[in-house]
Image 1 (cartoon, chains in turn purple, brown):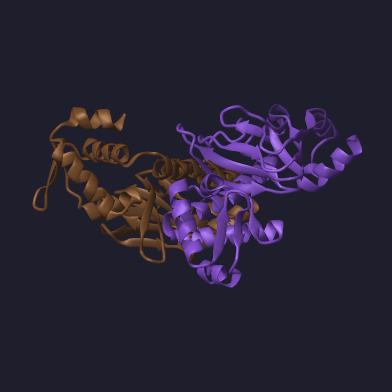
Image 2 (cartoon, one colour):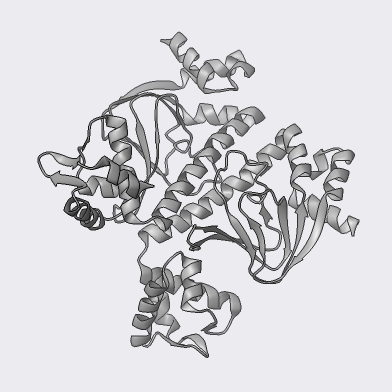
Length: 224
Length: 224
């Protein structure tokens, strides 16, 4: 178990080989392997959950409004590191993000205090932390550009193609409400666009069978 | 002139006293003091303009879509440092931002190569650069939250109060088009809301005199 953890850390953290035995020991002792069920909330803003490494499954980071509206910022897959859940380390970050398990997921969580302790004394850890956080800035800006600048038909076409390319087949088992949440849009807008796609024979949509893509070629041309 | 520059740098850059004489010399020799007229474009995405320090006036950072739609991300005032214009340093940042002078502005620009040279060899410079960049991440997220989650009446009320609190008086000398650009919205949406505010006696709007706030108390209650 501990060997496995050390293996994981030496791959995930480029600073692992440059810190002291004692620091490595602290890291390992503050770590937890956690299994989250699909849909579980892992981090909800303010508190410092710690640094999360995804071992299997996938996590979703999103913003949540007071009224419960969600906007998905990005997803984390095996090998990815979630830094924004360690709010104690990123003092300059004053916004709250939420993290949910999108599938059953196994994660390793490094305790916030242990990570912060190391962060305080090592420039290399600081630089790694900041670079990891900054690389996600681009993801967020991309989402923002999509929402602000891209037409809804294009966004929805990209989304649907994206889902079927991940899950295989040609069916999307999500409600309009769920799709709206993923896309940072309103259910009404998604439903209207689905109706338009259906009327052009691009998809068929039913409550029992979900959304079925009938004309992938056409959908691809909209997505381009 | 050079003394003034060194003074400015010792205030702007916490690492200034910790770098070598030679590095300071390189910094100063690669620097330019530039006067930008109101409306001038200072940086337009891809290229590395360098690190900009605002001496007077104000700059506006924004995203620009292919169709010319703008979304203002934040503003820079005297003493502020613009890092995103030094794209060569921030490799992990893959999105483009534009920078315009919002007023006549005097700036000092540190050449991208000189800054990068120092960034390469000093952890302290790296950490400073990343912290400066990350602190703006929160600004951008705030804008995003506003756009995605806040109702338009509230956003417009906050915007108008914000402008008059900065300029004094009770008049906003901006067109609906300009306001829409600042708010990342469409002119039609702003005009519709202005019409609503006018019909409730909160503002009056005319082409010649601009927007006049008649009922600040009411506007404040909408903004809350």
